[in-house]
Length: 514
Image (cartoon, rainbow, N blue to C red; front, top):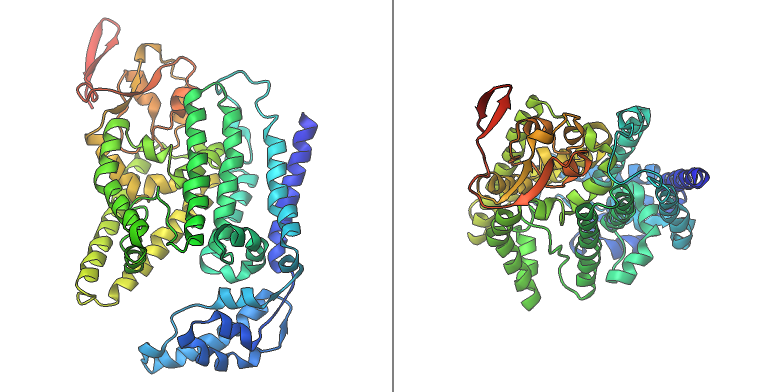
């Protein structure tokens, strides 16, 4: 079995290496008709003129091609900005679209070959490595040397992995023109599902889904025998592949707006943007259903389900961000900071992002219904700021790239506005709690070590107190790793949820209050 794992690891690393090399293959050549076919009609005449020096010229790297494009494009826009001719400035960025159209490479000609030797090879290698894992380990998680692993304890391998993820997200969000070969590689799959050419977001969605599926299998192996962990892992895998990946693509195929039915405002911060509203309102009955469904989830679904089940119903069973954190991020859960200072920072940051999302949405809705007479196009600047700072930098670059550095729930703890909304309901009006049997606690610390949300679970367990925290996502891993069965996830009457329990110390007793 060890040999199989070594072979699997070698295949995975080779596939990842090929994936990393693919963006640099081939050449680029822009033709006049490509501009006409790619650019919006109102910009065609201008771009056809300013990009004329690039026609027919062969570029042997995407860096050279993009550099020339940027020079001509930015020079044109720069002159207009100096004149303050803002209405004539081209705000659309065609770098990705034109780079993709100009690509000439074997990746474009043989996409399935390169898809097979990169992404699918990595998947096969990962599965070969995963299947033999925990084969001889008894059920339940023991002290497994996580702090002696270079990958899992901020060692060299962990830092390299984190750096790679951060670079990938930076390129994905802000420089997708440098990954057009990778997008061409998945183009046939996108055409088959939605009838549309692939974008960087389809590439990311496919990789995201595969990561959850592969690492979900690892979760099955690691927590085998634990019904709760098996069911919730299967749940996040199902919701990702169906609601987040397949159904939205099928919606596009049916000429309907792309829509993730499980994504909820304020996590889905663009839900009330004008283009989303117009897209739903112009799509007939299905569009109206999207709008009504989204509002019902916000106003009724979230508080009701959180009252009965706590925020775990979404954060650990449905959410795509949580799904990736619970599967791909599981090896790094012990890296979450359990200090009081981290908890104080967490409270201010996550609720600050919620306030920002609420204010932005309120301004957007007011401006929309006033016919953009309130702030005009100023809301676009607000959207851009939020999308850059929160939607991209925080949720993507930091939220996932920092898995090997700060644990797997950085975004959920410090930045997710929906987690803050759910947490407020869970803390003050919910039946969910984690009960503890203090008399059985041996203070081993497994529960605190494996808490991905930075909660010092042992502190509560030692005192026999119920754990009622806004940040808890009810993943249940603290209960799974406890060797004495001290912890239990429960939904019960609100009375007694926050308890005053006596703690016996010798012949005396003291009362600890939350």
